[in-house]
Image: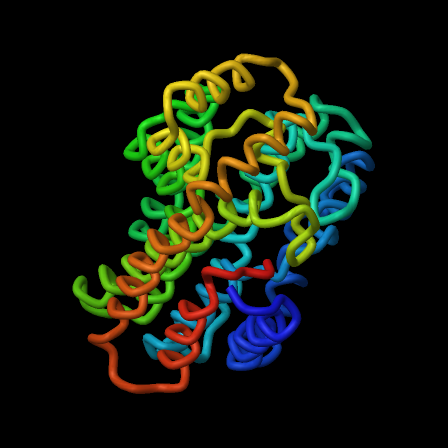
Length: 337
């Protein structure tokens, strides 16, 4: 895995190249979001302003902006508006996620639900979705409206599927991939395909960018899930064990359950029957993670999706945009955002 500090510098460098290639357009996305979320209702204003400013590098809208540039879109503001839509969808799902997971912290600061309560957070998330759909309609493209509305539906279905299988340590690997495909990869795929739609590219090129985004999203999520068990300290600001304590079965757990003996499987089943898991439970599970090299195996699985993502852009002519997008795949296994 390499040392943390040099690796983090490489990842941040990859992100900065992605950001720099679109100039000041990410700032325009931020301004568009701020304008669109304006409300006369004081609580909505407070909550949405707090949540949107709470951090994150906005990788998804960046993917839309760079993909649009790759596909020759220029001279308009549709890329900015639709990148803002992508970010609003993402932030709406985060507001809902924090309620579902009873999360108190996100990116090291208090969540909206911990400050204003679950009911307000759910409604604020709904408000973000409604504003997003207004922007989709304003854009006027039936193709993009269909794409983003179906993506929102897939994300919601992924959330329900994950909730349905919460606490199932014997979760099938196929079900896990269905969950992360819907919850994470679907929005990555939509973000990049929108760029091809804006450039009026061929179906083949739209499919290629969709494949790039989908497989990049899968790799990102697997890496994120693996880092939950990486060490006894924080990695890139991510507190380890969060998924474990919330009762989420991710790929490292699936791997140790598949490879463990009957006694180890029984132990895992028992601790995931609990409403709350202890630090001792986590420590013992971490020992199994290390015993069966589950983090390393997870990263190896993710490498497949990285390669597919990289190769998907092969049909595009060489350009700085293509190079930046392909470089991003090389670092996605060790994400810092």
